[in-house]
Length: 246
Ligand SMILES: NC(=O)c1ccc[n+]([C@@H]2O[C@H](COP(=O)([O-])OP(=O)(O)OC[C@H]3O[C@@H](n4cnc5c(N)ncnc54)[C@H](OP(=O)(O)O)[C@@H]3O)[C@@H](O)[C@H]2O)c1
Image (cartoon, rainbow, N blue to C red; front, side):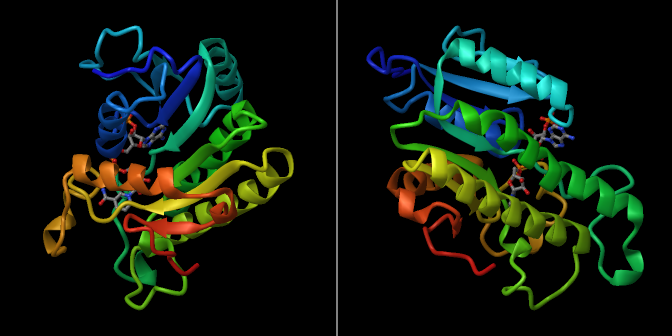
């Protein structure tokens, strides 16, 4: 491990740290200089989370505003986040399957995916973005998906997932505009990680030609995040740095 003893109180925070991409972000970030701690956040601490004071895990109900306020308070006691990655999201769960046609759309699946994919990251932004430093470069980014692009949608299907990610993109854009007023060096972005081998993609990724490991996917996303400048804030980028159409 190469935690940086000169990193002062700078934190990298991974929300959804128990997921396929979230856990890989934690592993990659613990090897990066510049972070005093890499803080995992999620609804529950994974059983195999390392017992390491430089890798604290904060458990919270991420859909509950009181819990999020307590989370922000707990984080502020650990340090100042220079990087906040929101790696939560869902595509399927028992009773929720991506739709093949409008006939399959239900109020329940729309409501659930909007709750997890759009509302949850927005509430995390609301409570955690105020912790970003005011006068130095910082990043808050959420994992979106290219299928959330309205302009790029030529196949249809996956109605609830696609539209919940489109809503997320708008919320990230709104957050970026507000952040620019008070934290002009902060960067707020939506990211497409590519198709990655995780529990979320497992039932569907076989059909895709290029499935990456979480390690490769997060390494290229972190490379991109280190290159982004404040002028890029509010953008929707894929893992190669290309702008994805809204
Ligand atoms: N994998 C891909 O190919 C792919 C492609 C495009 C975009 N993405 C996006 O990348 C992000 C991460 O996906 P992944 O592939 O890493 O999926 P994953 O392995 O299924 O991880 C999903 C994460 O979201 C958390 N989560 C889900 N529902 C939640 C809820 N109600 N409350 C709190 N946390 C919740 C999970 O928490 P628990 O650990 O507690 O279950 C887990 O940390 C998602 O936004 C996804 O849409 C993935």
